[in-house]
Length: 344
Ligand code: SAM
Ligand code: SF4
Image (tube, rainbow, N blue to C red):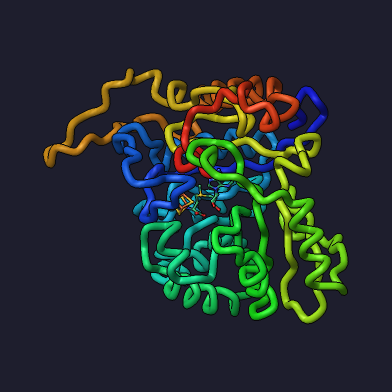
C-alpha cells in the first residue's frame, strides 16, 4: 500500500526475538535485560501479522532479532513466511555464529538471501566489539555460504573500530558477496558511537580504488547505493541514513518481537498489534507445569475477524508513517528502545 506521502510500503522487517548470543557494544552490551518469553509474539501471531501485511502489499520480509537463529523454530518461521500468498522474498540477517548449524535448514526452508553482520576482520577487535572470540566461526560459515546460489551480504556498521574498513571491503574481492557499510544511527547504545561520514568514506574508497564505478543493478530492496570495483567479485554498498538521507524512498515498516508495528526507526510511532492479537483473551497467559509462561493462542492466524482488525490497524499506522527521520536533531528522537529490540 502507499502511505500518505505516496511511498509504496512493501517491505517488513520482523524481529522474532530480543535475545542475542553476542553483546555488541553499540546494540546489546552486557547488562541489557531481555523480556519475558510470554511477551514475545508466537509463530502463529507473527503469521497472522505477516498475512495481514501481505494483504496490504508487503512483498519482502527480513527476519531479524536480536539474533534470529537463537530462537527455536527460526527455520520453521522462514518456511511459514515463505508459504504466505503474496510474500515473494524472505531473507534473514544474522551475526553468523549459529549459521553453520542452520545453513542447510534455512536453504531447505526457502531462504532467499542471508545478511551476515561483521564489523571487522581483526580477531581482537571482533572480540572487543561483540564480547566473543568468534571471528573464525563467522569467516568459516561465510566461506560455506558464499558458495550457495543465493545472495550473501556482509553488513558492517561504519564506526571503523580498528581503522580497517578496507579489510572488510576486501571480503567482496575474496568472496562473491556484497559488503555494505551502514552509518551508525543514534538509536539505543548507538548514541555512544560516532558514525563514519559516508561522504568521506566514499572519497576514501575512490582514492583507494581508482576504477570504482557506480553499480546500478538492483541488489535487494533496501536503500544501499552500490559501487563496483575492478577485480572484486561482489559490490560495495553504502547505507547512509545520516549523510545521505533516503526517507523519501522509504519502503518499510518494522515489527518488533513484542508486536509493535514501527513505522519509522526514529520515532515510537506505530501500533501495538500484540494487543489486537491477544485482546480476546486478556493479557493473563497461562502457567505451564514446568513453571514457564506460555501464551495460549487460540485464534487461527487466518481468522477473518482477526485479519480485519489487524489490517485496519496496520493500514492506519502506515498512513501515519512519518515523512522522515530526525537523526540530525537528536532531541526530537522519541525512540527509546535498543536496536536489539527493534531489529535494525
Ligand atoms: N543479530 C542480527 C545481526 O547482527 O545481524 C540481527 C539484529 S541486528 C540489531 C541487525 C543489524 O543492526 C546489524 O547489522 C547491526 O550491526 C545493526 N545495528 C545495530 N545497532 C545499530 C545502530 N545503532 N545503527 C546502525 N545499525 C545498527
Ligand atoms: Fe546481537 Fe546483532 Fe545486536 Fe550484535 S548487532 S548484539 S549480534 S542483535
